[in-house]
Image 1: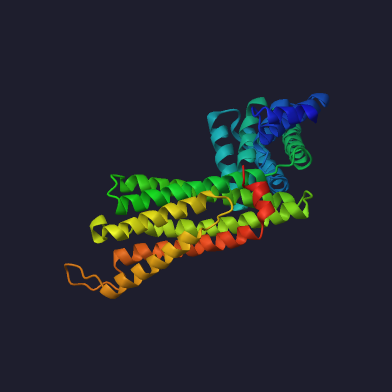
Image 2: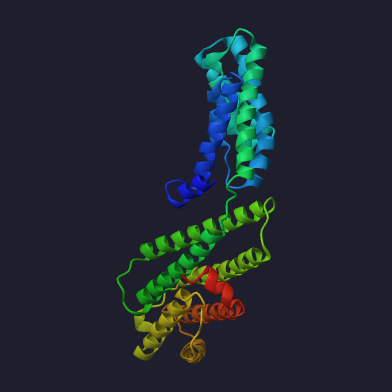
Length: 357
């Protein structure tokens, strides 16, 4: 175990890569001991290592019958058509179709590999070939599932915390770019902002996926109360971040122009954006008293624009013109930041342990 920990710290091999290597080693060892074909079992062991122990167990239950279907179909088509191109094509195609029809999607890859890989080495006794290939495939599935369950259980929490910090920093930079383009006559292209927004949402989705992996993993491995509380807090931070991403999505499409605002209004918008950036990048999300004062000014600015009811050249009277929408989204943004500050204030030690680097 010390050697495994050393390899993990070296950063060359991740936990999943190490588990794949260990699964392959033990699978090959067992097949060699019983004088069984190694290649089928090894291929199966490689493709069946999953992110979590829960996934390994769920998918192992599906992969075994799927492999049996693949082996049976390969045996049948070999008996009818011999070792030809048509046999390979039919074995692969029908295996995929049958597994899909039986809702064995998680076993399609292993079943298809089993079906096609066993055709070149068929023996004269079809039933012996069938049970031999099914047995070696089963060894690969069982070994990889056991390794995934008992060895190096993954802990996604540190990665989740790092991602959350990175996401808040990413959000702050995007907010700055959006307001800069609108207010400060920046030459930033809309497409570049939209690309950054898509990257942000994709990063957020990946972090939610890691959270799901961690939940699944804890169903089968022990965890402390402190770990669970820290994880729950991370989900609250992700929930707040989801709201922030929503407001950023609205802000990027606001069609307000720099000329719409007075110099004093521009200064207020830029200054309050700087305040928001500081709060987003601060793991404790502390809000200064000056920010509260500027938000008050922003609120007055909102009602001023609302009362003016800006009228377009087409004489269409907008209830919420672009300038008002911009200010409204920034006010909503502050509300989320205030929630973040309150959450973090109640979890000071947790914030220090997980988010302050």
